[in-house]
Image 1 (cartoon, protein in one colour):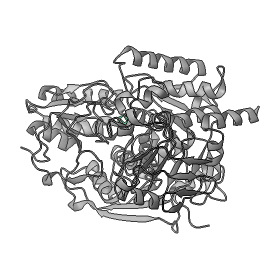
Image 2 (spheres, chains in turn red, blue):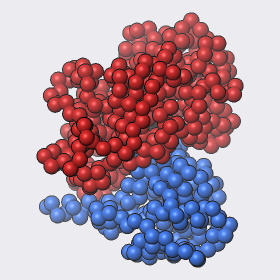
Image 3 (cartoon, rainbow over the protein chains, first blue to last red):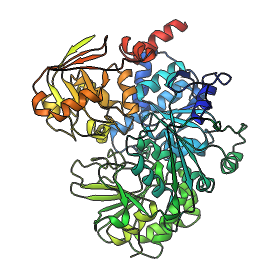
Length: 421
Length: 173
Ligand code: SF4
């Protein structure tokens, strides 16, 4: 057998085949280390009982993770009922890793609470489950019915994917961030370009990235269709893991592993990027954009709502006032982020500049709840999707995606810019 | 299994995403499949939900079902009567969700290309999809398509993942 890629090694170990290894396109049966879901757990629990009957028990209550994050606090009675159902399910099944509304976004809380050691498989009923690749795990998104099925039998089938190798070298110029790197990669690969593939990230620039920056890259790997976006474990990962006392071996891809595609990117000359409506791969340098006024500016989400993101934006807003025509919303990704941001005085900058601080949660990013935009309005956002209607209105004239720095500068200017104006 | 199309819905865009197939603003409303069907394709083609009927087939380009893992994007089309989707390619989670809900998807870049390029000509034609032999027939041509792999087929034949897992749970007892 050929040398094994990272995803091959992880899937081999999760399916009890570490000795023989697994081949690309082979079907393996995998039991996840942890399976994640959020507000959709209410619907999943209904399907679960359809499968098991009314007295069914989950396969392992310790390996189910649920965070309420999408519509919190519940904006209406329907959502409140929904969440009540989840709490009841959690109690009936003895699920330990339940985080109620206000703890934060599932993809932020899962690693923060120490549920993501390296080399393991995380399945998640959310498309950005790829985020956990930052920690050297295979974070693989699945659907609701499949989640219900895993809750019941503890297992699912996966096809071993082919892999892409992305090598990033050089030093990030000032004012350019990991979000700009991944937007540029998505531009090159396209929205469907990595469908079914697992991406591995390497290079001297990667070695210098924080866990938070890596999470942004893994998170947005989903927007190229990828099944996973994995960073091999290095010193930065080890340091993060110390707080949880994980025991593990460092695994790496074999030297003779085969990659379907390799991409090398020198980031030294990269400039700020923006994804234009209504596709994530519709990416150009911010400087190429014609003057585009905005109505809403948004910092948050599982892509860019962490402490470093808030810090960067708050530094830009310090002692300034956002443009009078712009509403700015800030969503810390978790309670922990909110707490740290409070201690560091970061929130003060936002509040003084005129931004609105919200509960740690997903917020408006799926148009279901809160801070929605109206027909004809435009938004600049640090999120991960700019599909039409994503922020509530079918008649929106566009969501633009950029780094928290570009979002903050645009909020001051009233139009999209990565410059100080 | 063999299907004959009722009406063809020909969607020429690539990357038709789950947000336009089933808008995010409804995802956390507890809706029945029939209610979901009334929002199918709402942000892409507002007439779809009104005009679609049992046995219709969708023809699409690349990466149909891109984006979120929301399963309603499969459920709503199935409940609306769509019997099959033929595309150049599908997004990964969408493809899995469709298997899990037993909605047949066919990957045939050749067939999609032909029909997308000659939309007017094929609009009112019937096509047949023969799953046992992996064959699509249009008025003037035939296309082979890869059959489902064994595991997917088992789920499909059980009528979806709920039934399949039910059976597996029974085996365990
Ligand atoms: S922040 Fe947005 S993209 Fe991330 S999990 Fe929540 S809804 Fe999904």
